[in-house]
Image (tube, rainbow, N blue to C red; front, side, top):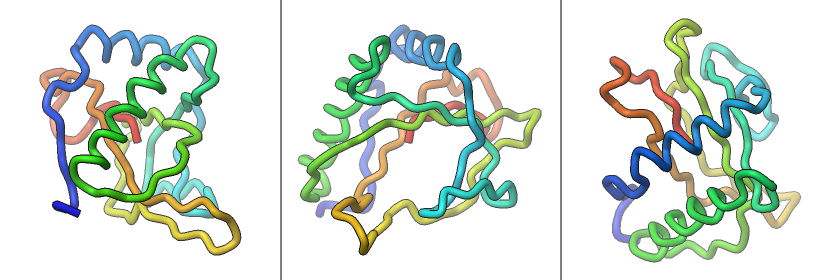
Length: 140
């Protein structure tokens, strides 16, 4: 492992980001959850989320693009043994809802299954000039 984090500047162009956001926002949102128990805990996280899977008829191609960047980051920096990715979560943090996700731990070692979250990726989809502070839409 070369470090605890890495980043790719401008991996997706603004048009692609806008296209992804516009398509995702057409879908119903649910409240973001925390932890393995998947509970809504507003003192920790206030966001709306939507999901993209590999078989998604409208957004499956974005899944492929995002999976490639995750694999590239892993190959270049972390070298984890990654076997699958079930979905991407598109999170929206809105200022009028005081949206945020406080400091948290994103790695889950689950004993009763062969699935473990080893790597989390965040892709900034919003133009940073569109907001102040930490309010944005991002993919995790």
